[in-house]
Image (cartoon, rainbow, N blue to C red; front, side, top):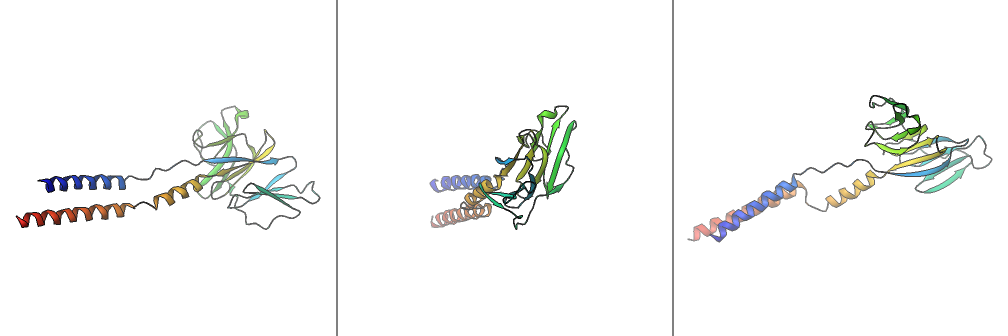
Length: 213
């Protein structure tokens, strides 16, 4: 009798493990860290790399520091454009809600970014990372040129504060940490193997018990 109860309890535990193993991973929305890059007075966006480095062009009024590169919180200056491979997207026309005015938009692969406003509230311009005007708002402001790399980092000229900004997409960093944590636990196939193995062992034990009577 005790073995029969143990068998049923173990089978129930195996089914619970299988249920947890088959629960899909929840997708998270992109998160951003916004960083100020400096004044836009006589300065222009020159390029953006796939790693998020942003180069500003100050060649109109420069003598020695004509280009400034912002990368990972550090800046460097040069008289000539830096030798970097740029990945800053191309102009596009994203789909947005009715009544929304797009001022500038750029796409890179499946990603898109835009600045614009709803209705007649032109002073309420925002920077968006997609077509959802609630979930995809990155920051207020915008109105000027913008760039977008394949990782989702956005650089733009904010006409209201007369500053350049970059929104660094930190979602892929967080997701990499989650994937590393998930790799330390059994995959669904591993759960299935464990559950099946436990059932087989208990079935053999029960069969041996019955044969010994």
